[in-house]
Amino acid sequence: MHIKKKKCIFARKRTFKSSLFDMNIYDWVVIILPVLVSLFAVRWIYFKILKIAKVKNLVDNPDARKLQKTPVPVVGGLAIFFGLILGLLAGIAMTGLLGAEVQQLTGITPAPRLLPIVLAMSIMLYVGCMDDIMGLSPKARFAIEILVILGMIFSSGICVVSLHGLWGITDIPWTVSVPLTIFAGVGIINAVNMVDGVNGLSSGLCITCSMLFGLYFLSIGDYVNAVLAFSMAASLFHFFVHNVFGEQSRMFIGDAGTMVMGVLMTWFVMCTMHDAGQNYSLPHNYCPTAMVVAILSVPVADTLRVMTMRVLHGKSPFSPDKTHLHHAFVGIGVSHSITALSEILINVAVVGIWYLSVRLGAPLHCQLYTVVLVAAIFVWGTYAFLVYEQHSNSSIAQWLRHFSPKTHLGKTEWWQRLTYRLDAPEFDEHERKNLRERLERKFMNR
Image 1 (cartoon, helix red, strand yellow):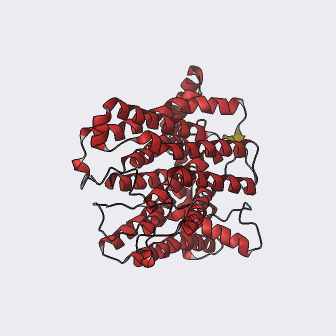
Image 2 (cartoon, one colour):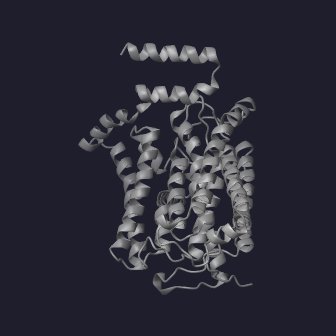
């Protein structure tokens, strides 16, 4: 069997827009409507799923390795998947209502093209729920992940079939491209899963990655994947806010959510590497490989370091420990929210440096080397620095210990008022009134 390199089957047929301002009204409607539907769908379903999780005791209990101190519901992925699917359904319905003539004009015919990734996300959601509730062995998860990625490859005809000139490599035979795609996909899924350690980190990183992929797909006219990416970001937003600022309303995304996000990031990488397309927002010499590595730099670089160190110490690469970058931040006293923000900013910085290298006309291989070097310095170097300072008594370590308590914003007035607003639906009217009065007395006495 030979997987042919298709000409970006998700993009309009060589009618790429040279600017976002050239998009017509139908393009904007079909892109914006699913995003709004996803945003409000998660807002509507969130507390219903939260209530079910608490009644059925579907919670993540604290232990020596975990950072939370109380049981937290662990089914946030269900809310995110609900919002994403409802948003995509709205987009598909809208393209149907617009009619065949408008579909030909916009180049958007999403339903059959979305089927492989929607089915893959559904399977991963189910597997993740099983893992959250009863636990699955790493071997079982690996086998399922490989089968799901194979299903996506052979049902869509998409995989990593080219490096687009990197090291002089263009077309890759299917005997190499399929195993390469499986290796990359399994790595991405597990990287997204393993980075989920503090409030807002995995969801914040995936919002960032989805937005970056969405902008890329939009720039090459791949509106179907752009809608998918932006809808995922919108679905994650409401969860992210509650995960960071909520207390009674906080849920964890769980393995169900991280596996859905991981397989979606894998899909975006597959589509990008299958046919990078003509991109009018980037110079002709941009390196798609460097771009996808930059977009996923923090979860991939952190996971590679953690798994390598475990193997070097004679442990299983999947044995749980506290050696992730977020553990180093928390170890010196930095709050969860600032830890998540720091890692997101590191990820954005790597993408920004890659983009600068493209604008400066760097060759393809130099772009990739730049991304790998910068990611290693920012991720591995930051971890090594924080761990060293945590056990030293240098002036920098003393400053970090003095500064770290200031990152805990949970006791500030604006944070607690926001927490009250987010948690309010969890209380009855009497509880809301008492909590509001306690907050007012507390801040009036300051």
